[in-house]
Image 1 (spheres, one colour):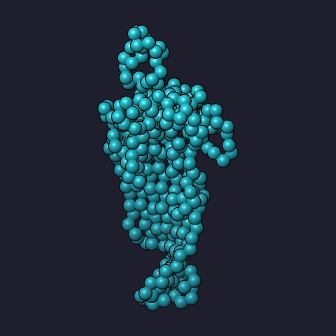
Image 2 (cartoon, one colour; image 1 turned 135 degrees about the vertical axis):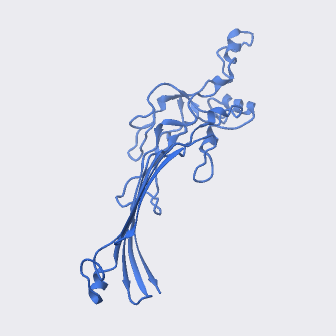
Length: 296
């Protein structure tokens, strides 16, 4: 479901612009990411119960605003100022400025815990996944603590070059299938431990909408100078800037708590937000480039 609002001004008097806003909510049980995979693949937990998988998509950004413009500067032949041909027009005419600005809300979070491979700690949990005939992560239980916190994951020493946004204490490992409170099958407590198989699955939602990744800001601009030699031959020289204001772009935090070993989760990167790499127009740092084109 979505509401879309769009306003366009067609090119006139050397100026045009467009504004677009989308408010949306996508509900799915098979969301795809940009690479064609699904963030839900790692949190299926119980393939015999598909109903809980129907949730807000982990790729859904509810608010997206995009603005674009193109403006010819009023200098040179046929313009309001310096309306001359020859050298004056070649020097001051033919300039235009354009830009695309994009602002959108972050996407919700998928949190999982990993079954142990059998090497250490809670190895029996891996036998549980084998028992039901599939391999996947589980979802943790919620403890009631705040999902967000300032600083790194609990029990992980802070580092200046790492930014964390999730609280490990908000989650607990689900009950271990092979570690009942008593080991005597004739004891009623033994039967009670296994009376509800769903207790061995975490109660955390498939997609946690109480937390969203950082907002995305993008400002790209272009200054272009067009110099005409004849009616059919001209040259364009442009200066293009991506991420004009050099914003830091933090990505979705690591949502895998890892295994539960020694009384704690072992993934020290849980909650750490990645940083977009400075490559291309969608990278982290500002990128400025020059281009030239001869048209004939």
